Amino acid sequence: MSDKQLESNKICKKLSQISGSDWVAVKFEKEIIANDIEPVRFCEAVYKSQNKPISLSFSSICCDGAKRCFGWLKDTDVKLAQRLSEKTGTSQDIALKLIRSVPVLTEKFSGVSFSKDIDGDVYITYANSESAMKLVRSWQTITECNLDTEISGIMSVCGNVAVKSYIDQKISISFGCPDSRKYGGITKEQLVIGLPHKIASRICAINN
Image (cartoon, rainbow, N blue to C red; front, side, top):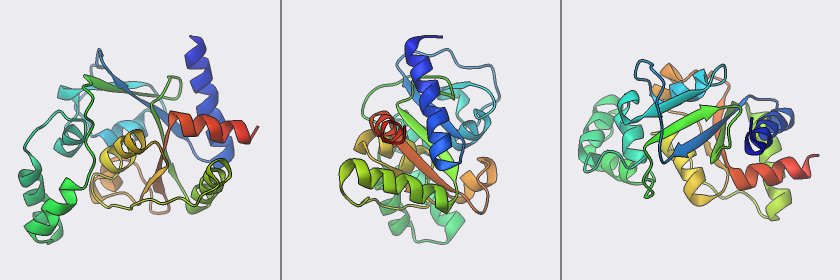
């Protein structure tokens, strides 16, 4: 195991000690050899990788919303808005506005790796409200500011946590979405939290 992997392993373990929840490191890969697995949703991979490492390429992610967030699908916002409208009863105009508010990676990646033992770009946990409080207080300590964040109920784990944390370089929080709660292992008491690597490292440092 490399020094970076050891460092990352310590980060996941330390974050778990701080928050009392399990953490997974997410790495956006320039080149990747995907696992030979049935296609899964991004949120489902986060949940499953708590037990074993997973690597996903374009073809092994079955959710168009996640593919859109990673920049792998273009010009699909209208189609995704139609699906969201049908599922929720929201008008297509509102659905399209919400879809377009979800961030998209501009860097080109070929896949995503998930593990407790890799050097992550983002670290994700499914946690209760007390765990969220502890992390927000750590954020306040290192930034001397309150956490200013947007909360969304669509593309919650892939776009509004993983990609948003990576782009904004700050904590992202979501209450999940129907699909992530159905397939991603998020319980009724849990919300989703994402930390970029730099912030995760600083939170671990101040809690030594």
